[in-house]
Amino acid sequence: MGEFLTPAPKFFTIADDQEYQLVTVKLHGKGVVPRCRMKGALIKTKEQQLIGKDQFLVAEIDAKFGGFGIVPPELDGAIVSGHYFLYDIDQSKVLPGFLQCFISSGILTKRIQKDIQGALNYSAIRPHHILDVPFPLPEEGADGVQKEVARRYAQIKRIQVHAERQLEAATALERATMLQHFDFKAD
Image 1 (cartoon, rainbow, N blue to C red):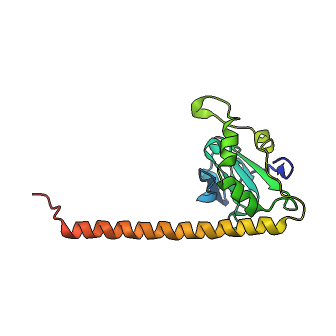
Image 2 (cartoon, rainbow, N blue to C red):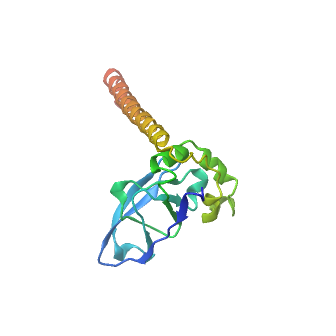
Image 3 (tube, one colour):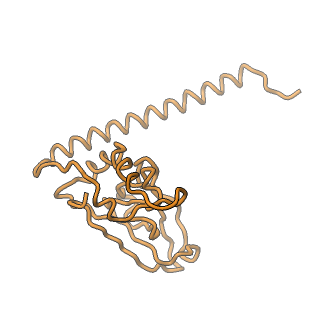
């Protein structure tokens, strides 16, 4: 992955009087999501990293569980601690959406698990481990293929979200039906 990723740590000192958007990465390659908004005075570690849209973000500790993702546009300018690795993506070689497909496949997680170091409860990777991961780099001019794969992946994700919502609604309906027909009042 070192052919298209460049480490891009952007450390700065946060101001106590400013409010910041903090983020985290979901496990199993499920992306970068908002954590909370917080005043700088409440953030103990004053050296933080500024993240940007379409960067690749890796959680040092949670990488073994797929703790990485592409920074979405709405989280541009958010912050993370030094326990995250940040990389710029050379989009002339790999589109962020195509990289997200690779992340979501679980292949990256399996490969990273081979490089884990440290005790079981605090096993972590180093930034170079990401750069050393083999990646099926498309041929030059393969933007169309990358875009199509990313488009299909996004379509599948929309279907999955819809199916999950339908399942949640069916479960709630089932529960309401059971509560309506069975008397659970205490004697």
